[in-house]
Amino acid sequence: MEISKAELASAAAATGSQTQELMGSEVLVKALQAEGVKYIWGYPGGAVLYIYDALYKQDTMQHVLVRHEQAAVHAADGYARATGDVGVALVTSGPGLTNAVTGIATAYMDSIPMVIIAGQVPTPAIGQDAFQECDTVGITRPIVKHNFLVKDAKDIALTMKKAFHIARSGRPGPVVVDIPKDVSFKKVAYHGYPEKVEMRSYNPVKKGHGGQIRKALQLLLGAKRPYIYTGGGVLLGNACNELRTLVDMLGYPVTNTLMGLGAYPASDRKFLGMLGMHGTIEANNAMQNCDVLLAVGARFDDRVIGNPKHFAQNERKIIHVDIDPSSISKRVKVDIPIVGDVKDVLTELISMVRESSTKPDAATLADWWKTIEGWRSRDCLKYDSDNKQVIKPQKVVETLWNMTKDTETYICSDVGQHQMWAAQYYRFDEPRRWINSGGLGTMGVGIPYAMGIKLAKPEAEVFTITGEGSVQMCIQELSTCLQYNTPIKIVSLNNRYLGMVRQWQEIEYSGRYSHSYMDALPNFVKLAEAYGHVGMLIERPEDVEPALREARKLKDRTVFMDFRTDPTENVFPMVQAGKGITEMLLGSEDL
Ligand SMILES: Cc1cc2nc3c(=O)[nH]c(=O)nc-3n(C[C@H](O)[C@H](O)[C@H](O)COP(=O)(O)OP(=O)(O)OC[C@H]3O[C@@H](n4cnc5c(N)ncnc54)[C@H](O)[C@@H]3O)c2cc1C
Ligand SMILES: Cc1ncc(C[n+]2csc(CCOP(=O)(O)OP(=O)(O)O)c2C)c(N)n1
Ligand SMILES: [Mg+2]
Image 1 (cartoon, rainbow, N blue to C red):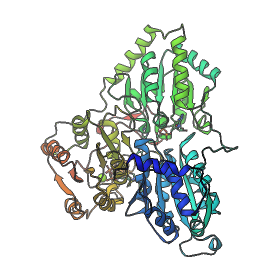
Image 2: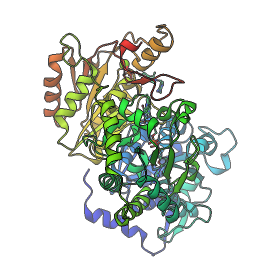
Image 3: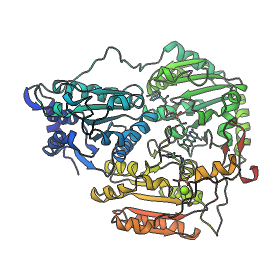
Image 4: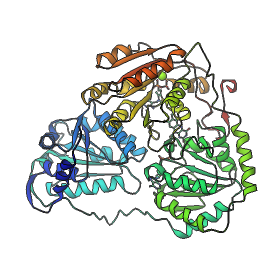
């Protein structure tokens, strides 16, 4: 649904100062309108019926009725990741909320700005084991940035203002607002949406400490083997241009985490690829062997540094820029902490580099690059790309990349081997085009992420790279895709295995494939057709490109492509559990 400017203006007028007598649910709708919300993904139930009634009476926001609350949160989360706006989901009390928990935890682990509105039983019934009651605040406390239980309708407007502010400021994250049914029903005087919000105990720092940034500059300019390691924080803080400028000025090598892909253009020579468990040799070796590491909006995840003792064997000075002080020195000891917003800090660093009379030593840097090029020449992502017998999963991703690299394309993924191949073989040159679950690693996000994004970006092509295991976890959303005309393209790398589990069992459990083979898979072509979409079965390597081309031509249709891929293919490089990041398996010859 296209929302006209006039409609948006009328929503904004909701912030006017005239006092109105409104129900709590109507105040909630005004608050959402004033926050500029365009889409809400949700599912109704008894506790939210007044809210749904208020939604019925407005037409500036589109509500999307999903088929499972988990998908409502994932879709709103995907929308938030692609646009940078706060994603909004609405669920009922009890099972509605518990179904949403996986989605909330997924967003929390990746620091995604969201507001989740949950219905609650009426206030007098709370604690009475009422029908569809659950302790929403208690259940969600460990997986939210913050949560609220609104006990009085007069508090709704300010609570919503706080919820949006908390969700999008500082280190972003999901905020749950729990609204009892009587609160949504009660009438209150509405004086307009608050313009400002102040919370004494919540004041995230934006500007980094000038002295610390200067110290960082000195370290960086004096480095012999510098390395810039960046993560999801650069995307969340919209600082990709600043990162690019800094890297160009310094000429230093740069890497991204899985969550940071696209923060720096992958096709640039200074980019060494993703680092970590399935990172490239050059990215991991540079991480281990650098003497000055600039970490920007990245949190030294266990999948990135491998065995911490091995990581600590090499001495290096670490500068860590992060908006969340609790992220700093959490997993590794940092020499120069800089708490602040990545955009502000990089802007200041750039102007200091510009003004500085010291420049990086060209000869030393050239030596470092020579070492790196030596690592890069191993070409660790090489695979059997000419195989004519069986479809190699990497080939599907690479073909897709070649076809779509010059168009506005969003690539979502589920979780498993296919996710890693997508990260390794699709080269992300633009920010916010790679949408996946990193921290929680939630199977099932793929379809909801894609449909959330397609609604916001109707002109863009939206693909989900998935596996036959993951895709079944939210497959019911194919129905939502039809209802709301969000034509997405599903690239299923069907290896008939819970491949990532099978890979671990092959490597770490001596080939004891305990419950990782998926027998009795559905006929995905017929399934897609049953949902009103197009299904394709692709079994031969020579059919990969024509199938993708055909699917892209069907612009207005959701297409499910069931690629039968090599069931025994593994993701390499791989750092095994307990190993250091340079102790990589590079291929089956290492097993
Ligand atoms: C199967 C599987 C395999 C994986 N393998 C890998 C792998 O090989 N390599 C890899 O990298 N990951 C891998 N991951 C992902 C991994 O689990 C983590 O999710 C990821 O490494 C974390 O990325 P990040 O450090 O960029 O942090 P994020 O989770 O993106 O956190 C962002 C950081 O930036 C900070 N921040 C946010 N906003 C700002 C701002 N405005 N200014 C400053 N700071 C800000 C936050 O406080 C936080 O510390 C894998 C996941 C799965 C499911
Ligand atoms: C909800 C959930 N359950 C279990 C897991 C553990 N897990 C990680 S990858 C994986 C296998 C995924 O299989 P599939 O979707 O077919 O992808 P493949 O690895 O074969 O590409 C499993 C079970 C998970 N990440 N999420
Ligand atoms: Mg599989």
